[in-house]
Length: 319
Image 1 (cartoon, rainbow, N blue to C red):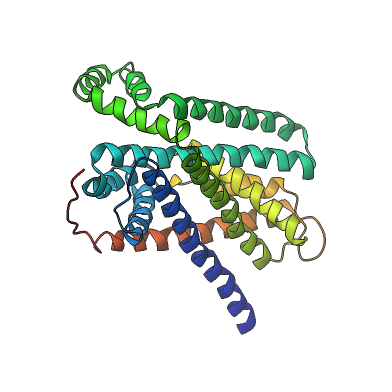
Image 2: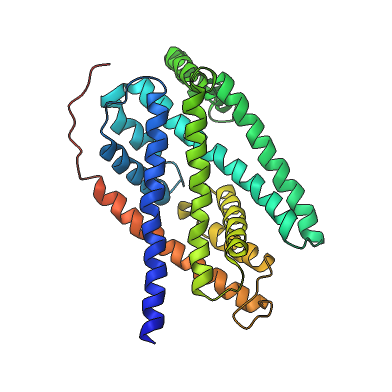
């Protein structure tokens, strides 16, 4: 029994520790984006700390994924100024989401190639592919022209936001245009930074699949390493898609668990006995995966909140 507990501890520790690397890659992506528009005077360790705390705030905010970006802009502004801080944070968020669209499209391709398709998935997969391609198209246009002005103009047409949107545009029009120019500049004039940041984010999404891979190995799901990784890739992709569609919910409660349940059941995996998992067994695995992921999120959320108190003083740099 002790060996089983120790074995489980190794895999769970690997899941928690893997996020040290993933957050490191996120911070590196952000640094590339900042350097794409000039110098990056902020120390990398502080950028790493802000990255972790930003994601922690996104996990914890009641509106869902809305708290980390303002915090990152506030922390970066003393180093590079408000406009560059805002454009770099928006560009990082855009790159993060852009990589997700490509990740979801890749998962559809893998599913078609390696998993038997039933009638339900024959309907769902084209819809997911269309959604991913539409998102990619919109982001490509946004990278070329900037999208901040367009978003504010769109919000100003919504009921209840018209007066606010018009006042905001009138007051900050020049700043918003400058931010859009900096967004377009990264893709148009600094392609190395653009493709470097995108590749890092996409590779980060791929590496995140190992979180599911470790847990499938822990529960003795059968298959070769490439096969288990493919399962993990698709499960994570479909789960993240479902959870992001419910981005407005705090901690994406219910969305992620439902995504794990549906995607794990659909994969038709083989258990330790060498036979296909039953619906009950697949659901049990899905619940186990979602619990471990929730524990990992809570641990890193606590770490991120504690890091807010470390290294908060900064000497403002003139820009």
